[in-house]
Length: 114
Length: 117
Image (cartoon, rainbow over all chains, first blue to last red; front, side, top):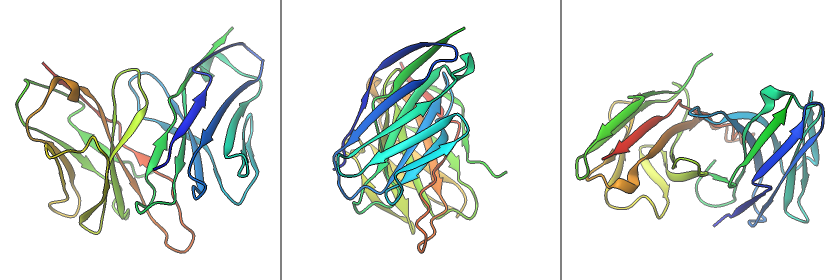
């Protein structure tokens, strides 16, 4: 089955700096890669996603890049703000029998210091 | 905007007791999922459900677990005999499913925190 590895596990930046979180996946048939932000005690909230036929996608201060050959994808947050502090999860939807099944990475605790 | 809802928000139970966690997915969605998140850990897939049957289940989803969609709106997860290690947040999710385009955007419910004592 699919396996998703995420790094780093914690990331601390100053307000205004950029933050980058990286994930690798194992199933070359995976075709959808969402990123979620999770605040304490809350549900995962989709912040951006990318499909396997696209190399990059941007939404204001957030961007995701995908390298299918290397099987890795990254989340880039520019001009970080304290409210960006949360746990971020990458995930992948594999090419297996179950439509839409998400395999999550281990999460990155992002702390943005004012 | 329609949302996935879950009840209860918090359930406390004693080891060995049965619990039923309830979810109401978005009404025109076709694919349903349960995930589990132990405190401080990643979200883990439990089971997927489509066309009134399980399409895939993980190793976690053993004989103590079952799912049901009894009335076309509710989607339930039952744990027959709870263990301490079942303590976690349980999230229900659904996907609309568009077979031509392949929409995978998954809508999560707010979760049920299960505490087994």
